[in-house]
Image (cartoon, rainbow, N blue to C red; front, side, top):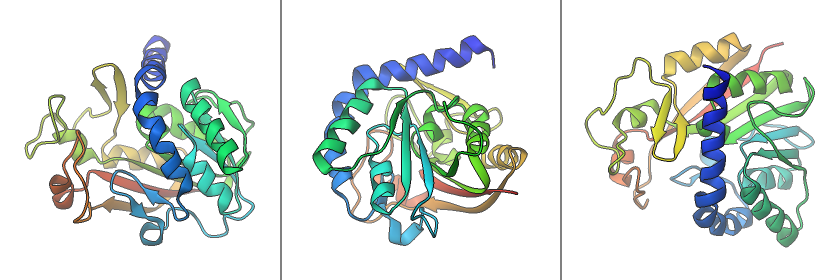
Length: 253
């Protein structure tokens, strides 16, 4: 990918989150910040079920890549970690700062690009992304960057749309029960005024391995019976097929 194409998706996504998404995502921040037990993704999967956060998190240096309103970093701080939130949207970070003041939880918030984070090598014990860099940044850029930031033995945890969802996603409504695109070449998804990224499982496994990671788990999430529908995917669809998934990996060394 050329530098121009790289800059293009970052700028599109920055505008999307600053100009549109902050208006509807910001009001949800308070609810997320108020949670005592983390719940992950579209379907609110509880931490007790999927154990996203690693053991021994107390004292861990953590970086949330594409933090948005930084509620994941707030959960980490409550668990005793020392998080840093990184995001390219000034409006999302402004909401995060307002939540910090309201809830009395303080940690660094950095305006920056998760594909090129302004920290030294071997700085963090944990890198995490819940629909942040894991969806909005090029995996061929942000995953090597996560590896650079982590100490040997450091953990990478991220949540994203599943490849199956990406194959069935539609620009005109929720995911269908038929394939809308081919799997070979699946990578960059244009959706109106923003860009998302999803790799097939084989390519993601090879990328993680090439960056020095050992994959420890891949959890495909099923929507619960009480879930509501979303514009992009119905709860009925996600009860039959996984619309989202959680990856857990460890940096070898």
